Image 1 (cartoon, rainbow, N blue to C red):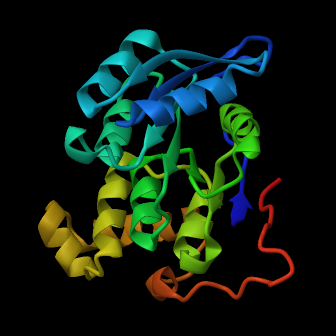
Image 2: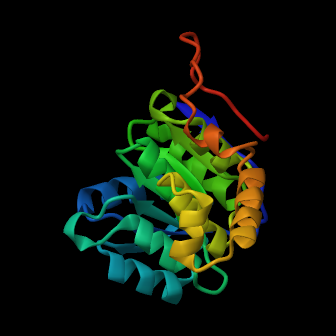
Length: 231
């Protein structure tokens, strides 16, 4: 597993408890996370949601510092759509994706949706409270399986600032291997505008060209697969 982090501007005040909203379609999972977080003095759970609609509603009403969000909510909604909607609200909270999946596609979707962190369910849960604190302090922290992770996800998670809504639209099509001309036709943009967006996107995620988006993952040392970037 790899731990990747970089500082961004946070909304949480260090002298107050971190207010957390849990979103997962499995009540047992929510109970487990609540029990873990509430054993600490500086973390509290202010609400729980089991579906997409309730998650967005509670995020707006409760104004938590952080939302712990399952990537897949079964028939009750898509976690990435929830992430996008919450991030589009005024003064949005940090969002930590909590998932059993760490495929390149899933990690890329989380990046595009604006997630601030990613915690794979196969990771050691004693790490979880610390990850919550770090994300709320302004770090983008990703605990993921490097064996399944392309370089674009590693870099996109670590390189700031975050993509703008329009850049996310362009980036989504780039991940589908659309050419600049195809992006322009799809989003009704001129070719020079598309090229400008692509240049900005690549700069933000630390790549020099489109080709680097799909490079194979780097070899992970058998001695230690944990690394820290951006601290």
